[in-house]
Amino acid sequence: MIRNVIKQVYLSLLFIFNKFFKHNIKSQNVVVFMTFKEDVLPIIEELKREGYCITIIAHPKWLEFANSLEVDKVINLKNKYVFQQLKAIKKSKTIIIDTYYLLLGSISKSREQSVIQTWHAAGALKNFGLEDNSINKGNKQLIKNYLSVYHFTDYYLVSSDIMKDVFIKSLDAKEEQMLPFGLPRLDQYKNKHTYNVHSKKIALYVPTYRDYTNEIQTIDKEVFEKMCPDYELITKLHPSITSYDSDERNIQELVEIADVIITDYSSLSIEASLLNKPIIFYCYDEEKYDEMRGLNKYYYEMTKENKAYNLEMLYKLVNRCKVNEAIKPMWHQYTHFDATKKLIDFIKKRSINLWK
Image (cartoon, rainbow, N blue to C red; front, top):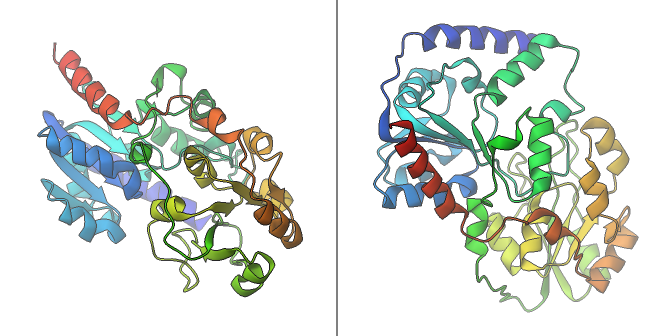
């Protein structure tokens, strides 16, 4: 309750502050929000090559990294820098976002501006947005606040018709807002060959974040490697979880070296399917997760095989190591490893058309 009141006060103040900043749009100015750097980094690099003036509004953990990219300006995402954020947004023709940003719900937008959502996943197995079981759908003000942020977006990058459907239902989007270009974060997998310099095969465990509990359930490495003697177990926890048990390497690097992926409700399974990896779903709390967050019909469709509800079954599936061939065709209809180029071409074309 208190948290919602604070949010409402914040939005009200933003609405007032917004009026002090007039639009002064420059055609070459682009703002890129960075919370999930893998999603926007390919876009930033290509925009730099094309000579755009780039401002990154970066999550504090990526400030040092963002500054290393040598763009025109880097602004901290924290609320105390909101005036700088507003000024940059009001001057930019193109705004690229990678997740939900409360800030955007109280900003007026010019028709000359384009807001493009890359999202931070190759697909979606759990409910989010308006479909999330954890939100109070009876709270009209809360839903209004969500919609004000969702409606700030003009376009969504998608890799499949399934993701179109997900965005339409979850974020109140429309069919004509969808850009079937694929995702820039997936372009790096073009002609990618898997490699493994380890003496054993690698089993990568990537559990998703459970925001309704503080419990973190991992797989005992010693027991796992005893039951699956051909494998070494590597665990990569969600970025929201701080633990010494989590491998520090980049998740995409780990996906490449892994021989089998063990996950649950994470969209990483969809990304890993591009490399034809065996993917096993360890879903010991499926019923609870569905109750608290909600799992969509696509999750149940793609997990008809290679799903374990307990460790005994998990060990059997790992040792069998079978590729689930249903995942890739479901989610990568538009993945042709040229999403970044298509997006930059779209930005160029829209910029020209708006100024005619």
